[in-house]
Amino acid sequence: MKKGRVWKYGDNVNTDVIFPGKHTYSILEPEEMARHALEDLDPGFAQKVKPGDVIVAGRNFGCGSSREQAATCLKYAGVQAVVAKSFARIFFRNAINQGLPVLQSEEAVDSIEDGGEIEIDFKRGSIKTARGDFSFPPFPESVRGILEAGGLISYTKKKLEKNKERRY
Amino acid sequence: MGMTMTQKILAAGAGLESVKSGQLIQSDCDVMLGNDITTPIAIKEFEKIGRDHVFDKSKIVIVPDHFTPNKDIKSAEQCRMIREFVRTKGIKNYFEVGEMGIEHVLLPEKGLVVPGEIVIGADSHTCTYGALGAFSTGIGSTDLAAGMATGKCWFKVPGAIKFVIDGRPSNFIMGKDVILHIIGLIGVDGSVNKAMEFCGEGLAFLSMDDRFTIANMAVEAGAKNGIFPVDEKTLTYVEAHSTKKYRIFEPDGDAEYDKHFRIDMSVLRPTVALPHSPGNAQPIDAIEDINIHQVVIGSCTNGRMEDMRMAARILKRKRVAKGVRVIIIPATQGIYLKALEEGLIETFIKAGAVVSTPTCGPCLGGHMGVLAKGERAVSTTNRNFVGRMGHRESEIYLASPAVAAASAITGRITNPEEMTN
Image (cartoon, rainbow over all chains, first blue to last red):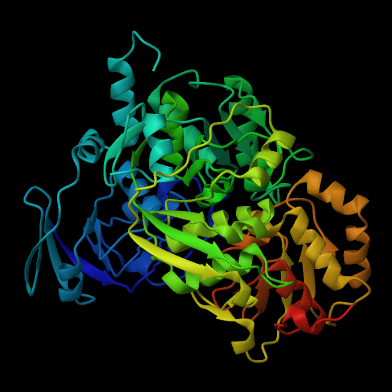
């Protein structure tokens, strides 16, 4: 459990402004992806973000492309979690697969100001802000399995090892 | 309770008798797709799994189409990495420059997707194949990596929104106008994690190319997939392109839908999505004088044969406006050749447009038509987000090939109905 600064944005933050398409062919290292995080939305973000900070946004966060770099660049920029009113589905999948927590809570988003402080308790499923405590719905079991394994790749690796005798 | 068309396909893929909205399932996949920007990351993740082989060499399709023909050393290195993977893993469906095309136009053309299949692709516009009555959806590179190892993918079974399409569209109305109108109606999050299921008598007036365009942009409303029923047009297309076995699914009569919409195409106007959201759709009559610097006709949304024919019909014996750059990109080698045989390429060049080999280039600000600060484009592509085609202070107006071609001639956003030939 860690306190973090809030970076608050609006509705429909899309993958092009999170990680521009023009960089997708030239950058393969996650640390370098992080240096371009939110480049076309908030050009100062990548320099100023600190480990443990939290992105808070409105509806449909991560809409647009399937590019995984949008989740990866935030994770490697040190973002602890993204709290939004709702998420676009491919971004949501990518974040889970990368082990970046994505939390949905309309009330929490409305109560948080940009630059404020936020504390997330993943075990209890709660978000603490200056204006109170808010809960977020727990992940379904299979999604929890992926997160607990540390992402989809280690989850798949473990599963394949378990089923070694039969071709999966 | 009955199942929607999408739910029936997913139930079959997961080997279950029935599924319901919200259920998490693991399903077999018939086709898994990657391109030159998502596959390199998938390869890195695949290697971490520690498997030396893919689950099925014939079910993986890789199409380098975004930064190809390679624009610089870095993009060339990415493609080299893909080529090496394809060679060592023995992947059968890889399409090199010369035989490639824009992935979502190429796969149906090559007969690689047929009705009833489950398709995942590390590209958000993978939803295009719903036009063929398949379940197909975009996933990330890590999903593709896991899929290449296991042949399976996790899905949350979506609910659905039903769109009843009625009415005969007027002359210059295309699939693009239908889908832009719908996204304007329901919003860019109007269908998040849901299926968009299209039906109705109006489908008889929508060609396969129109349907591909409509299904392609389902993701711009946040949808998991867009899907059309399989009718005679679908089967004619499939039989002309594929020898794969297909399976026809229909929604149950008592299937439950979260919402219903009725779209009357007879009153639909040419539609344009203003910057910076595909949801900012406006009928062309509401748009005032807007000067443009560039026109792009192409992409996985509108680079098909009928799109080329519509553009040529409008550009024939005309000149593009002085100072406007017009870039036309047939989406596959097959379409390029056919356009050449039909004399369309000659029409384009005589009109003052440039014609490019297939590439996604300009759509994502990659190459072949990047916008400078303050520039404005009319584009038949699918996204007009800030900075999508170049500088963050450039602007994109999304429209059909008819509107784009008419605008190329006048140098401002123009109703194709005003053009006379």
